[in-house]
Length: 257
Ligand code: A2H
View (cartoon, rainbow, N blue to C red):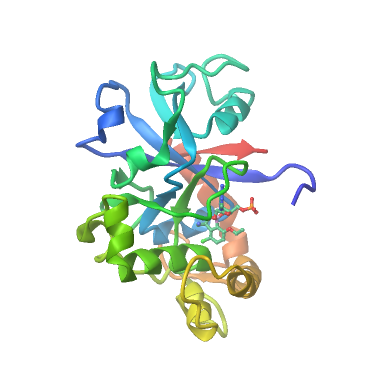
C-alpha cells in the first residue's frame, strides 16, 4: 500500500424504503457508496458492511447535488475534488448529518447493482478501516474471505446479531453466489479457502491473509465469469467494461485515493 494512487469503483447501493430514522427526512435518493477493487464481483453481493463505531457523513452528490451519498467525511472531501459533488472542493453536508455512527444505518435495506438478491442489508463488520476507501464495504462472500468470515460470524452468533439490531431475515437467507470459476478453487473460492484453513471468525487475521493471497491472485487473473453479460470471459478482461457499464447506468463512479 501507499505506492501511488489506487483507483476504486464506487458502487452505489440505494437505500430502500422504509429508510432508517436518521435518513427519514431527506427528499433525495440516498446511497451507501462502497469502494471496491473488484467491480466484476458485484453479481455476488449478499449484503453491505459498515463499521458500527466509525463516523459517517451524508452529503449531496452529483453535478446537480440531487443525490445523497453516505461515506466517511474524509472520502467525501476527496470526492469533492474528483467531480463527484456539485462544487469543486466543497462538501455540502445534509443538515445535522455531518457525523453519525455506522450503527444508525445497520439493518437498512439496500438495492445493490447487479446483485442476484432483490434486497440486501447493511450489516456490521468490525475490521473496516476508517482511513481507506469510503468506510463502506460491499460484501461478496463467494470471492472475499473477509466478507465470508464476517457473514459467517453473523450467521453463527445470534448475540452478535442482537447487539446490532440485526434480525435473522437480514442474514440467514443470504448464501454466497457462484459468480467466478477459479481453477483449483472451484466456484466459491473464498468459501473453499476459509474451509481449508478452518477459519472460525473475522478476527483470524493471519489465516485470512493467507486465504486472501490465494483467492485474489488466482481470481484476479485466471478467474472465469459464470454469470451476467460477460459469462465465459476472464475476470481480468471484464473488470474495466463492467465498471464502465455500471458508470454508464448511473450505478457507480470512479474514485481515486
Ligand atoms: B473489495 P485495498 Cl470480492 N476497510 O471489494 C477494509 N476493507 C476495505 C475498505 C475499508 N475501509 N474499503 C474497501 N475494502 C475492501 C470486493 C472484493 C474486494 C473482493 C475481493 C477482494 C477485494 C468485495 N468486498 O479486495 O487495501 C474492498 O473489498 C482485495 C484487497 O485498498 C476493496 O475491494 O487494496 C478492497 O478492500 C480495497 O483494499
